[in-house]
Amino acid sequence: MLLSIDGVSRTYTDSDSTVHAVDDVSLQVAAGEFVAVQGASGSGKSTLLLMAGGLLKPDSGHVQVNGQDPYCLKPDARAEFRAQNIGFVFQQFHLVPYLSVLDNILAPALAVSEPETRARARALQLIEQFGLSDRQQHVPAKLSSGERQRAAMARALLNEPKLILADEPTGNLDHNNADTLLGYLSDFATAGGAVLLVTHDDRAVACAQRVVHLQNGRIAEPVVNAVSSRR
Image (cartoon, rainbow, N blue to C red):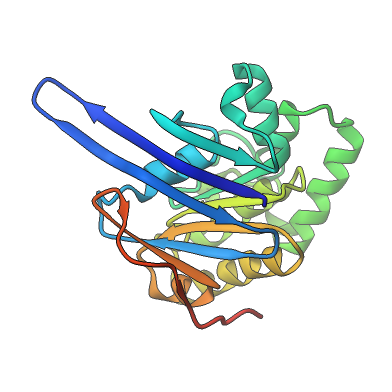
């Protein structure tokens, strides 16, 4: 199992209130699976994704990615583990504004023991694959939203991860660019990777093999089959 989430919970407390953002959630995603998590704003989707990605330690429960609990690792080792095993795709792209497309895509190679020549060759291959060859020296501000998300997807794939975690990745895209991105995610799963996507987008849900509904931090109903539109 590429991703195993077992009874994770996360609570946020301030002077006025306590919020159980995620409450005893268990979920597994196997190689070759595309799983969507759907729920209203505040249901715990993004918190669950951050815990799955080794970015936010659960208050209780366990996470394993490719058989390893990232929270058992020291911070530097955890960062390297994430870079080797997980690709992240976000709604806001999170490209470094002063770096070119090429350098943004190359950024994850800095966290792993990767020969520079091999990483660069891989980045150039991805740039061509994602139709960004004439944009590789542009900074993000010079790109369209679709181009930014393609660059972010290429960056997520640079280190050949086994798992992609996507947080509302179609939220800033038009219909055509959203379909293109969902096709890339579906292809990644078809090739043997695992995808966990949180979304409000019904088109994204339709691409998933399974859908998990979150409500108030808990799985609201059993996992249901979704109509697959894999390409």
